Image 1 (spheres, rainbow, N blue to C red):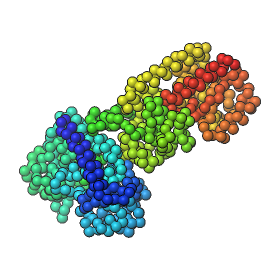
Image 2 (cartoon, rainbow, N blue to C red; image 1 turned 90 degrees about the vertical axis):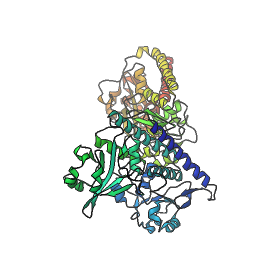
Image 3 (cartoon, rainbow, N blue to C red; image 1 turned 135 degrees about the horizontal axis):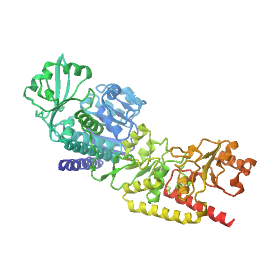
Image 4 (cartoon, one colour; image 1 turned 135 degrees about the vertical axis):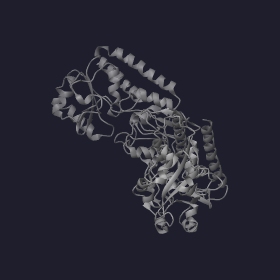
Length: 614
């Protein structure tokens, strides 16, 4: 446990060192709007608003994607896709700029990049030519003075500074460390902590079985050591992190966990070889084939894939633990998953009405919010509480990822977003917390958001205020308890009856009214009925009917006003008994929370007063 605490301290220290080095470098001269960043081959003045990045090494492609930035150009895209198995993936629009060894300079120049990222061992001959195209950051992927793991951290955090994604870097590294800690706990629980291992890549070289055995300074071995295993290959650290050997090297190796990567066709031949079957770790069933495409030279995301693959091969499942990096803590989301969220989130993006409502009710101003359904701004009842500098991210179904990135958030609330591709990209920007499922109440959501922001008491107080308001109005509506009601949203296509997901339904049922049981689409699992024709309007002729349109839907308003004047509508009992009420559909048919329900209660109070005094 102590070594994991130490590892997290080292991680935080590295972040501070990298950022401090950049600040110190800025004492030199760059023009306004650029920052000076030191790298393995010198210094570069990098734009403070990098938009177009070309990356010439797979490991750095992973780093850029993990930070939520899609490069415009990448070297050897096919090779990257074959080896690097992470989310998010490269967009199909990314341009292949040639091989990693000999990238096409003309193609790179045509992409008009703001920044080029490359390894020093590949660009020694064309460094000046690349630098003439755009600022370039060069990294030493295989240093001799520090471990490859420390180099990975340094490179990742330097790239984060260059891309202005420091908060995202902290989030990614926090999640990586939390995952390593959970893997360590899983090994402890399985009684296999502190076991020895050898990590190998094996292949045929001139028809001779050849093995790369990884040394202590390699990135992959450092990671497996962090989760509680011990490297049994005790050769001296090597420049590239491995020693190349043949079968003779196994003469002195006894039983150990042997994790090896081999292409499937070679694996099939290897396992029937007499030399292989005679090895102690093969006889003890401690030889674990990891497949043919585990990437051992990547960044934080690839290292989690490595750990997951090793544990899976051993038949061990990692468990969620309460281990997050410094300044983060674990909170369980609506799906039962642990998310490392900042101790005190400052820059929050809210991607649903429910999330915006909860934040504003708790007195928290988001930096960016989603629009209402089909609208260019959030619902009116929420807009009045939002600060003037809050940015719009587009719609719930199509959030603008570039706008979200530009806000540099440290937390994203998304309330049940289900698009896996968008969700993976959001996770690359900042920790993403799902605070609600469709079936849950706004009270459960508010309680969960309160926990994220250490405001459980404030959330409880708001829920108690709602309960008190309901009790007061319920007394006023004692004669109506048990009455049937519907809430109707009138669109240009006609009326739709709203089902139990919208907040007004939940408010009215809390007041003692009931939905009609003879309309299946009003039950749980539905949002609303299909549009009804005017000829079928009598289906809404229940005890109480609340009718409204969405803000900005002029056609719907006109359609509703026309329908209200028809003889068919005027013949309904709800008209004769003065039991239909015009309401603001943008609020009554929303999926909001506390602010929404209290606004609806205000409307109901007014309706009761008007009805009583009429």
